Length: 163
Image (tube, rainbow, N blue to C red):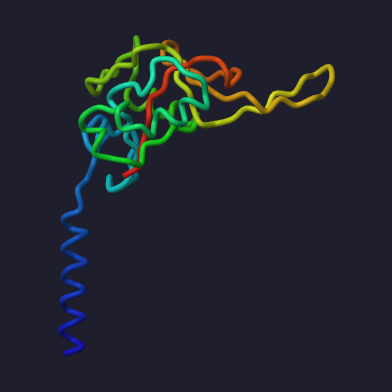
């Protein structure tokens, strides 16, 4: 009996791993476009195909990525969307080969140049040595590169999720 249970368990595990779907950069999957994958293609990151806001402050951006009404039809099928960290936006720009706000790999474009990240920036005034905590990083999709600004400024929002 114990041998049969082990055999069935081993069979099911090997079946699962042999049939695991391999995903690739640029593939439409999971409510958006895959822009990063691990070595075997079983896990990675997906970017939404539409903006969740064309212009909002950083705190509003945190809310916009969670609201179903702000997502594409495919994106609405998932509830784990979040604001990307700044390194993920750089990876997105590089891996999808974004040029003139559009990807040369996947049919996806960005409607504006600047997009919020969830990464905060701590500003230090060099004259007074006082720190400012109400700043965050954003990514420039027009030229590629990161910069920071006050969280109260308006920047566009594009959500990501993991698979």
